[in-house]
Image (cartoon, rainbow, N blue to C red; front, side, top):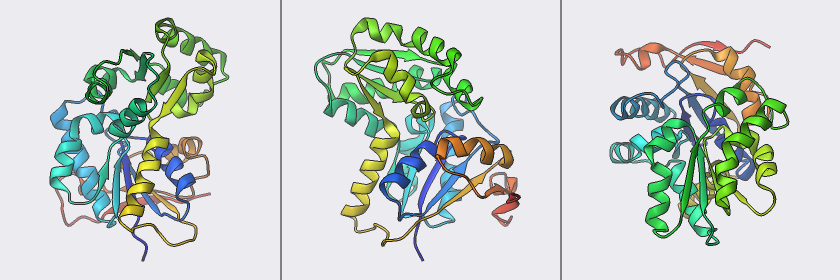
Length: 283
């Protein structure tokens, strides 16, 4: 039996990481958990986010993953050290790979960082990049409207999205950034619009793509790559499976055939409860 890659996020955004991994590693199977009952994590305390992230990993471990990806910027910033100390499986967040890519491609110009208010306020990307490039100038900008716009189904070509991007990204343009870290897993869906604001001279660093590259390299080093074939995706959520299936297909770039609702007792006190409850398999 193939062991899957386990991936979790507070909701939909981590599906862009799944999409990148499936493009690079089509033979791999993926188990994805979206904690849609407790989204967003960004407004929670570090202690609460860590608790949620531990519970998310414990659920994924029921599927015996060979690798776990924390596809959530908030959980990566707040909980990754605690998760690595608790779980023995190889594990990546999305912040460190993005920071490494920013450092590797630095051309001496300022580096831009865009993300949610919580991610920018945490300083996680700034601190990670500063450890690698102490002398680099960093320009951070919170972009709180982008996530709801993406989840409403608006694309990079939408006039409202264009206007919001132009306003948010102007300080980075004025600073003359040479690269921009997309510090939210929703932002790859707006990559074309972001690129149009900056023009061809600015590199966009997509953490999802970088994570996929590093996971592929790590699995190869550990001789854990799946044999040739076509892997699948199994999606689990803690609430709203129908909405996840409908909206999530845009993030994943392919239809989501089935989304399974996880029993609440898995997280809230009944260790003997079944792992899953009702599914969402209707056509």
